Image (cartoon, rainbow over all chains, first blue to last red; front, side):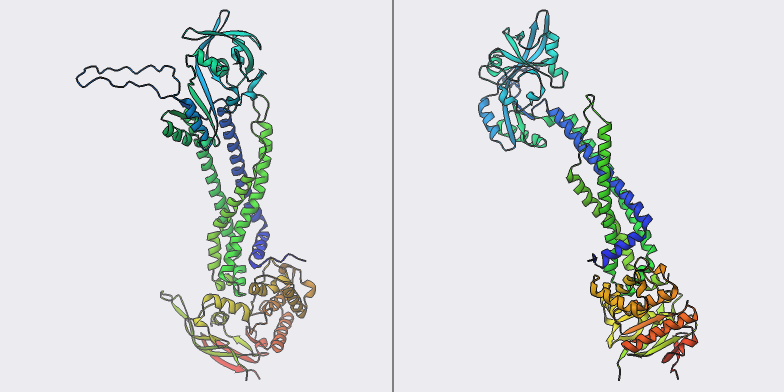
Amino acid sequence: MKLRLPFAPLVALRFLREGRMQTLLILAGTAGGVAVIVFLTQLITQLQAQIVDRVLGSQAHVVIRPLEETNLRAIDDAAFATLIEPRAQRLRSIDQWENVARLAADMPGITAVSPMATGPAFALRGQASKSVALMGVDTTLYRRIVRMDEYMLAGRFAVEGPRAVIGTELAKDLGIGLEDKLRVMLPNGRDELLQVGGIFDIGNKDLNRRWVFVTLPLAQSLLDLPGGVSSLDLTVADIFEAQAIADRLKGATGLTVDSWMQTNAQLLAALRNQTVSNNLIRSFVVIIVALGIASVLVVSVVQKQKEIGILRAMGASRAMILQVFLIQGSLVGAVGSVIGSLLAFGLLQTFSAIYRNADGTPLFSAQLEPRFIVMAALVATSVGLAAALIPARRAARMDPVQAIRS
Amino acid sequence: MSAAVIELTGLTKTYNIGTPVETEVLHGLDLSLMEGEFAALIGPSGSGKSTLLNIIGLLERPTGGQLSFAGRNTATLPEAEITQLRGRSIGFVFQFHHLLPAFSALENVMMPAIIANGAPSDALEATALQLLDAVGLKAHAHKKPGELSGGQQQRVAIARALALRPRLILADEPTGNLDTRTADDIFALLREFNRDSHCACLIVTHDPRLAARCDRVIRLVDGNIADDLPTA
C-alpha cells in the first residue's frame, strides 16, 4: 500500500525534491541557525543556573533582620540642636522572632526557616588571633538553608555543647584539626573554649576563614542575646520569586527583609544582560533564517512559474497553490530544526569534552533538554511558514496564461 | 439535436485598457461549438487565436459580450467556480505538452483528478493507467516526461486532457513541434477520443492538411471570424 499524500503536500514535496541543490542549501542554513539557537540557549541556561546555584550555595534566599535603629527627634521646636549623628547599630534581636518565624513558615513559597544568632568574635590559639563571625544555628534547620553537608571535609555538620564547625582556611591559619580546641573571645569580654567537631570548605576562602558555627544557645549567651536571634534565614521554592516574597514579608512584619536578588544586584544585572544579548543573537539568527527561506522560495516561485500555470489550468485554485508554497516553507523549517537539534547535540558533546573546570569536571553537561528541541521545532516551523507567505502569495496571484506562456 | 458546449455572443477582448496602447484584439465574435463537434481554428499569427482559446478555456475573461459554457453564463460566476469548471470540464493540450517535469507520466495523467478530488487514490491510478494504455504508453507509465520523446510527451498530455472526461478539449497547436508522422498519430488519437466520448474539440493549427481533416474550419483574421465552413 502506497502512501497517498493529498495534493498540496504531494506537490510541495516534489517541488522541493526537484530543486535539490536549493533545498539542500536552505536546509543547511536553517539547520545551522537552529543549531546556534538551541546550543546557545542550552549553554546559557545551564551556565546561568550553575552561577546562581553557586552563589546561592553559601547564602540564604531571603534574610529577615531587625529594623535599623534611627534617631527619634525628641527635641521641641524651640530647641536649637540640629546636628544629629546617625546612630551606631548595636546587635539586637528580632522582636518576637518566634512569631515572625511562624508567619514566614506559613507563607506560600517559603520552604525553610532557620533562626541564627550571629556576631563578631576573635578565634585565638597561642599567638594567633583571627577575626571570625560566630554563627549560632540549629544545624538541622540550617542544612535546609545552605547545604553544609555537601561541603564537609572532616567530621559532621552538627554542633552541641562546646563543639563547633569551622572552615578549612581558619583551621589552617590556627594550625588545628578535628577534635582540637580553640578559644573564642567576644568584644564584650566573654570567652569560651570550643572543640572542633567538623571542618568545611564552602568554596569561598573568605567564608572558610570567617564562619564558626556553634549552637544557638551558646551564641545567644556569648552575644548577650538571651533567647533572641539576630536574623532569620529563609529558603524559597522559586529563587526568582525571592524578591516578591521578601516584599510581602516586609509588609507583613515591618522588619528589614533582603532577598538574594538585592544582595547580588550586580550578578543579577549581569545575568539579565547575558539573557538580553542571547535574545538579540537569537532574534538575528531567526531573521536571517527567515530571509534565507523566503529568498529561496521567491526564486523557486519564478522557476516554477510554468508549472504553477499548468496546475492552475488544470483546475488548481489560488488557495491550493498558496498551500503548496506554505507547506514548502514549513517543511524546510521543520526538517531544518530536526537536523539543527542533532547538530546542537553534537556541539554540546564536543564543547563539554573540550571546556573543563580547573578540577577537570566538564564546564557544562552535554545533555540537551527536550523542551529546547520542541521550542526550536515550533519556532523554525512557524518562521518557515511566515517566510513562505510572501512568495506563496505571489505564486497564488500569478496569471495562468502568462505563467504558461513564459 | 445536440446541445451547445460553448456559445459566444458579441465577444470582445481589449488589452491595456485605459492606457495609450489600448488594443482590441477580438471585435465581437459570435460562435458556438456543439457537443461532439471537431473544429479547427486557423488564422495568421496575431489574429487572436490564442486569446480566443484562452477565453474559451476560461483562463482569461472577455472584456465584453457573453460566454456561456454548457448553458451557464460565465460572466457572473465567481473566480473559484470558474477554476473548478475549468478543471473538471475542459481538457487542455498545449503546443509544448506542458507536463510537470517532477512527476511521472502516470502522475501527470492523474493530476487533474488529484486536483478535483484533493488526493490521489487507487481508483484514480487505475483510470490513469487505462488512459495511458489507450495512448499506447502503459509501459512508460513511471517515466518522467524528460525520459520520453516529443510524441510520447504529447500523448501523455492528451491522456491528461482526457482524465476527467471533459466536455471540451482545447488544443493549441498540439502537433506544432512534431514530425508529420507523429503529428498524424496525435491527430488520429484526438479524433478517436472525440468519436468515443462525444466531447467537443477545438484545435488551433497552422497545418492546412490537418485542418482539412476536421469537421469544421473557423478562420480568424484580425480579431474577426473571416469564415466558418464545414469541410467537405
